[in-house]
Image 1 (cartoon, helix red, strand yellow):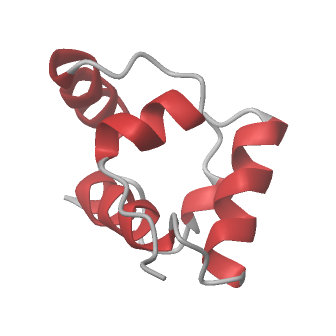
Image 2: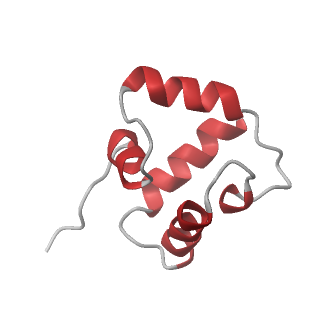
Image 3: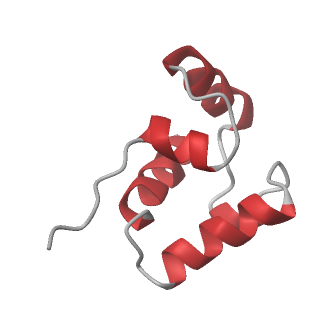
Length: 77
């Protein structure tokens, strides 16, 4: 059985955020750069539910982990 593959648009939908490319780019530019000392899930712009989801996906190396890592890198730039 294959692991599901998710992209940034799907992640933004999962987080309840606008998922169009322009909205994703605006979100990243608005919230970048995230300080290296701040874990992605601890960033102040997430709701408690969003932060919990991001934290769980990374800790469990779940099927969303790869795209969560991608978002983390984009926010560091």
